[in-house]
Length: 321
Image 1 (cartoon, rainbow, N blue to C red):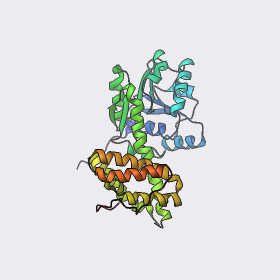
Image 2: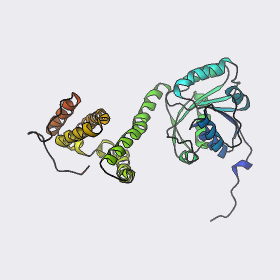
Image 3: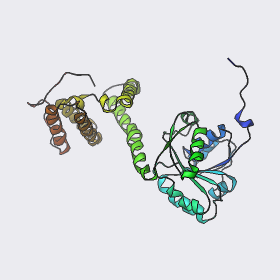
């Protein structure tokens, strides 16, 4: 093993001065990652106390300045504001002359591609859309999580190499997304990641109500295995009472949820119907069992609970869960 001392990134000459407009959970993390690659964060803008604390934690000694002053100091500007605020911010920066010709202007919105930066392009700025497909906490652990993280990249063809190089420097993996596909791309990520948090939080609440003292410990191995199986096998990983066609069990679930957690019923029914459709299409759910199951789901959705033990409800042997 070599014992040669590795060079400190701080000893390398900085190649770009980096500014952040919007010190939420994403901007300071990306700037800190670029700093590790040899770039130099020079200014951050943030309004709330929380954003200022994040900036101080991840980018110590980097001054907090108004957005226009951030752009004055930076060669590379990260616009890390909420999606709905991005178009107005871009227009304002372009109209006030804050953007310099040749300045790299990067936004991190999943929803938008490079077109939202057209006002920047018209005044000579270089537009890049780099969206990290990652959930952020606003803590230093986020910088580590960027290693191997996919980024949705959209930019003019002549800037494609520059965009991909920046992603690689942050430890990420560039994935090219066409301009017209950005909303669909973002919807897919939200469906998988954001809704997963809601489902897991609801599951933990229900387990606590059922008397489980450590629902996180119970769910951890189960959900880890389910996620791994789903990523490997897609619909082939479907299991549980819906995929088996256990209509009586599903009806019993809904009855319990109506009593103990009525706010979860609509979500349960929607996911059960989607799961049934996919299991049926994939050949996992037998058509003769699907009829009873879909009937129960339809009845429950219309507020006419079915009888879990009614004749004609098929029970099957299968895996637990």
